[in-house]
Length: 445
Image (cartoon, rainbow, N blue to C red; front, side):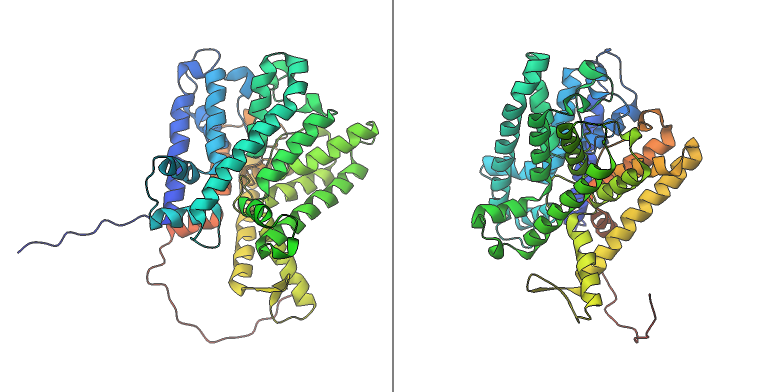
């Protein structure tokens, strides 16, 4: 009597996404450990290579070695390759190669793409992938060409590579820069703090990359007919506009008073936009007031929008809870926005996500503060930057010991793949309890 073969357990779409990111990080780590990846020709320690690869794949930008002065052209190219794939998502890249080879995309692959891009349905995901790849190519090339005059004027032919690197990094909301060799280690874009062209182009690339591919798909289909957009796109656009306008006004009136008006506007605008997971800076962050630092921590945790190159809790998460609060104040029976009702389950997910991110950033900051003996506010800035995949730093990351680095690596990975993705991948839904306990009222507030 033949024994029936046991079927191999299939990976869920969430597990596929997590393993693909982990595999890419490991491959990047091995490449960055090669002797010719560093300018010195020495083998990079595993911890440094792992931290850099994780930061690149998770489009964060936190570094333990200055990208320009430590890594060779091969190393910088590897970092650029990792952050490009990390920004688009490895699932998107693999699907693109499958399409180019003429292979049909299976239902499981389509479901994985749906979860990776946060699309509402499986139908049309392959078409969306084509739109994403073409759009990314156009925006990144256009951004590089636009910044080329400024970079070449100051740095000669090397400016070609620099403009392309920073265009890709900005669009992917990655925060990596290669300015250190020309303007000093960890200087980011402070050299261009008053260059309207560079500041404007980088800000536009950050916003475009972080606003979400579904939103741009809506714009491509309906142009400026806002009423025809998906509700998600409407929420994303309104929330993103508010998260740029309000912090800009606050920073404009509380920081940079000693700067000329043009420089003041550029600095306030750039620091507002870059905190939404981009990670570049044009001013010294250590000189900012505690109130502005706290504001930036909140913006870093918020992050970009679903289905974008950005990480963080996402703009829709914050918006859903604010909409829920307004509906409660107005004594509405359901959560509503733009003439549509939002499911109660979505509100619960939003509350869960915020709890996860705030808890992880807080606990991580406390542990690092205890180990390193640093102020909790400084540590919270770094952990919020890591879990929000931002990359802004108050300068403590390069000097951290191994345990705090591991904490930041874990936070970066969590922030990029998404908290719910990790939870859904780890927790099986088989045998879920569908029963309901009796209801009992409890007073809150």
